[in-house]
Amino acid sequence: MSNPPEPKSVDPETVIAIRCLNKSFGVQKVLKGIHLDVLRGETMVVMGGSGCGKSTLLRHMIGSIAPDEGSIRLFDQDITVMSEPEMNEMRKRFGILFQSSALFNSLTVGENVALPLREHTKLDQTTIEIMVKIKLELVGLREHADKMPAQLSGGMKKRAGLARAIALDPQILFYDEPSAGLDPVTSAQIDQLIIDLTKKLRVTSVVVTHEMDSAFRIADRMCMLDKGVILKEGPRAEFEALRDSAEESLANDTERLIRQFLRGDPEGPITQRKVQSDYEEDLLMVSLKMD
Amino acid sequence: MSPQDKTPPRSGSVLVRPVTQLGHLTLAVGRRSMGLVGGLFLLMTGALANVLKGILVPSSRLKGEYLVYQMVRVGVRAIPIVVLCELAIGMILPLQMHPKLDEFGQADQIATINAIAAFRELGPLMTAIVLSGFAGASIAAELGTMVTSEEIEALESLALNPVRFLVVPRLLATVVMMILLTVIADVVMVTGGLLTSLRLGIDPDVYYHLTLEALDITGFMTGLVKAGVFGLLIGLIACHLGLSVKPWQGSEGVGQATTNTVVYCIVAIIGADAVFTVIFYAHGLFR
Image: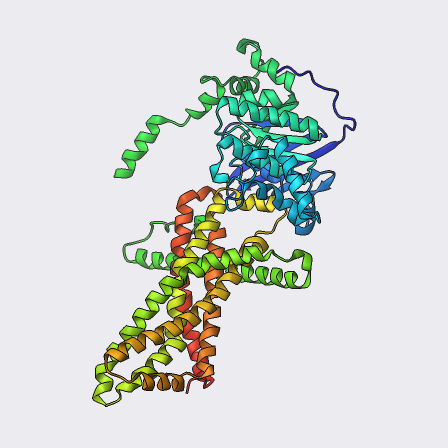
């Protein structure tokens, strides 16, 4: 899996530009001054532990959450100030693969893929059916068009969700935890599919994941999110180097933290941070409350 | 539940505390019901806008199959239960009335009472209560599950409006099916009364004529108007509560939404019924 970094896109313009993004839920600050660029044709992987804000970041990019502050520009248009009809036009230009695939359970796989085509294009029934076949063939599900989502395995659901996401030929694809809940082989197949599709359709991809094997397979560039802050952003090679370096050679705690995450080590700065709350004090508080 | 709804601070003396808690409870209940009414209103205007747009702009019209599917699921399958309930009530009511009426030698008036009760009140009301449990609960559970399984978000991400796509067909289906089921219910209840009357030795011819006499078009129409509004209430409440489930609430949120839907529907239906009856009475529609 060592495809060399290809010459990056003909047009190196920025497709997604996030500036000074802040978001709080109640008193909890989830995103703090996020600053991120995604270039045309690249696959950007956003990594981070559970609850670090990466899903929230993704939901900002697809316009389903509005930020408290900051701007998000897709194709150089700020989606944070868009009206609903404008946003709907924008939504037709990107596709999303949801964590749970989010297929419509009352429709067959084929109808799921056909739905956006039927609603947003003026194509006739035959053309739509052909388009559905093409999209399903791209993800390897052509024979399963008439099945209901409930009859599919987890991996097949992801494929079907992906077929629906690419139905309108989007220019950006967002993936929310594409390998969550899949076995290693299926997960690797989905990764391969993501790589193939990115090449075949020449789309820009943003992948949110915490599966490191998968992240290193598909990424052109990566960024590491922790507690609502981007710790590091750069090409995959930089992260690989960091992962493979010896712990003693690292200068600061941030790098050690990233290294622990990349390697999945049980010991390190992340673990230390979690045990900081005082056990004895906690016990003492319980006995105080009893009085 | 918003953070403000949480239990009030436990301060103050024993005497003051119940008062404070009552105040907090009132605020919480008030806030929630205002939220509900506001939400229903918004959903209503949204659905109305989409229906109008569907009528005016042919391209944004919904496919008929969605509506038919919802009508079958909401209404057609509820027919046996509605028939069973109304038949039973139609048979019980005359039996309850009979001894008293017989005392005055007016046993035949069973037909009149039964017809008025069926067409003006019990037909629409019982159908609405059956449908709250039958359709309301299932719509709320379905939409709630769609929220937790990211399907609503997926719909929005495909630039499809959930109100147009999910709410409008369900609302139309509950309204239309409520009216149709009420007609069935009316007829079945009168038939139930007939069965009892036969047993009590009332001439079926007399029963038939007295029923027709009691049945005026106004009474029939007021019943159907009520039925339509009840259907709208069931559809609105079920859709609103179903879509108000938050993704992270999971199965618990869906269960809560389903229970609340049935409870709120029944309260709203009876409340609306009272309001309608007063209005109809004041306008002299009941003679």
